[in-house]
Amino acid sequence: MSASQPQPLGTSTVATDISTQQATYLPPSELAAKYNKGIHRPIPVQPHASASQPGSTKIKTIENFYVRPRWLFVRIETEGGVVGWGEGTLEGHTEAVQGSLKDISRRLIGWDAMNIEEIYTYLYRHRFYRGGEVLMSAMSGVDIALWDIKGKVLGVPVWELLGGKIRERCDVYGWVGGDRPSDVLEQAKVRKAQGFTRVKMNATESIGWLDSPHALDETVKRLAEVKSIGIDAGLDFHGRVHKGMAKQLAAALEPHRPLFIEEPLLPGHVNELKDLYNKTTIPIALGERLFTRLDCRPYFEAGCIDIIQPDIAHAGGISETKKIAIMAEAYDIGVAPHCPLGPLAFAASLHVGFSTPNFVVCEMSWKMHYNTGGFDLFTYMTNPEVFKVEGGSVGLLTTPGLGIELNEELIRKEAAEAEKLEPWINPLFRGDDGMIREW
Figure 1: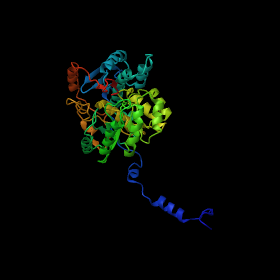
Figure 2: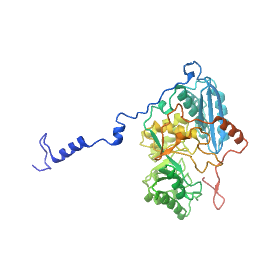
Figure 3: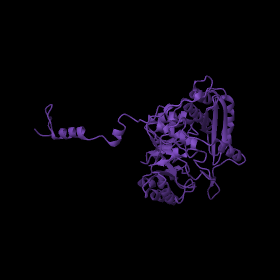
Figure 4: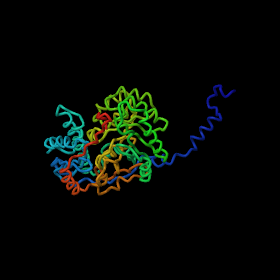
């Protein structure tokens, strides 16, 4: 009987013998053995003393603090003395968000801080006009602070409230270059020494609607240089590159295999983005200028992105960001929170990452080009060690709430100083003819 003919039932062949041996004798991988019964990291539950006191979780005060380099922190305190911190930073629009927070604060005094979904629904639905970057950023600051409070009252980390941990570490990336990228190779070497395995950089500086193809040459060169030291790099087009140039740049970058290209076209160009998506194998990321599931929906349904990048300080905080992530999973889209911001937004993003299957990587603003004047990610923290980068990732945050501790005295002092200054605004790019360009 030849090997190609059907074999009698129960007949043993060389192939079945080998497959049986492999199934029987191949030992489980080290990780499979380690997590055979799931992830076990016992976290002591330490409810706050006020947890059993009726009325103790009512919102007593809501404050906001603009601090350098460009962050807007939100502080909420309950009647029981629990303090939650959030972040509603909207770069370049600080005063608009503060105005919205003034209105929100007046409305929410006396509400139960534990009813996060009710408060979110009230703020989003009740006022008829909804969405947009200003209102959603103000809501983000409040929402993150409420999750911090709830975790502290119940004595658990926020990820525990989001369904529990699905991983013990979150991958992160740092920045190299600046708005006008240069010296990226040396900066990438520094990032590698700091523990990063991935970086991001701006793809281009100011560029014309239809520029010389040679304007893209340096972008390709920079990517090749950074990858030459053995780390991956994402390229942020920042919406600066219009359609005619974007497809040229994607094609030129493809042989060098960037980790992703971000905002290769401006948000709103769904059909055009789909055309570009069909022309490249590079993963396409987008989302920092989308603020709700409804904003994200057209991109999901069009199948024009691989990675969604909600910014937790713009996209309704933890509540809406988690829902965006869940929605994205149904379209096989990864989640990479956008976060060139402060420690509260970063911590909140990590909690979503620890509890979300399709999380892929998170942006980290440590020592990035926007953090100037001696102000950086750790400036207002008293436990910066929780953000230590090892092997390209940050470990599980394990204390109640967001898991970071802030120097409130320094925050109040700095906010008083920053109030005397003009808030941060983004640079203005112009072409040789004086025309304003995308930043």
